Length: 482
Image (cartoon, rainbow, N blue to C red; front, side, top):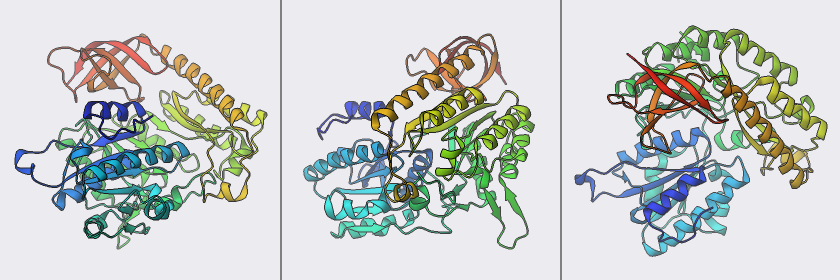
């Protein structure tokens, strides 16, 4: 996927990053008076939490005098924010590190650091066996970056992967390096207490802790003042958000936090990710229904449609529980869109159990899904207890069947939108043509429509859908929303 040539030019390099759809380069333009400062380059992979963490890292580095660059060949510090969810993500990171290592040899003094979820699990391999990096920094140790950089400058191989029960970075104002100025992300909690047997997150991100509700609302308000018109509240399991004041004078659950953020301004759209089926409450659903600016979209990972497999996955709900939550969503928020995550080919999964996952796609009518075949992750409960006994060919065939059905259901869902008019937040130019805008409606569906003079990203417009594919709605502008 990546060109191992370390001298590839910037345009081609960025094209490779974009086409991978796994990594993003974080940067901001440097003012002239900062041209002589040290420069850092950062790539982020995996979930949106990693992208949010990279913005925190950028803020910490800015405080120590660094400025960002999109050209890794001119950087003094190269960082890669990693993901351990799938083997493919780890393979990608290793390829990137080999490229960075060649740059280090061409530019003596350049430091390379691995951040995030791979840091704790593979620290010894990176530092001692492969010797590709100068520092390894876990998700709870970003405040220690200045000290770790100083140590690496002195020739040490620096490492801090200690997990914290308190760290939330609530006092750090992230630098929105990759933002379009319209959509912002706010981390509301860190870690995870759900010990899903296939997942490494509890081991790489630590125990669950919630951020001060007042700091979250303040960040949302600040983003709105800066011109942002949509925020996404992030957490491994947002529904279990629970903050209590130090003196126990008040506590805030997720439904109450949603309401507080929605009240910042009616023109500020609010989204959230990710929900856990065992924790999403009717209170949350009624809060979504109450406020027009809380989007009618819920990402509700099912992982499997079969109760026995769900038990092996330690998901703590069964097929019927999940179906009841889907029913509640559609009952309380009739036009809500639901998306999902699915893993096929989990240990001992039979063909009949695979069919249960297929039938869940049709039952829940997902607008989209993130679909993978099972990839055993070292250190997880599944790796210790279960044999990864489904042949790769079978996994791939089952995944293909899931993708095919999801595309069919997505297309059917989108075709029903033809003729409907939606309120759309303009996010920027369409990828295919600078003559068209792209935006999303409350259901998180992407709409493409022709530009009109006087409109700009951040404006709300009414768009009537005229065509649809499984992934995109095309339409025509009806009116501007003032």
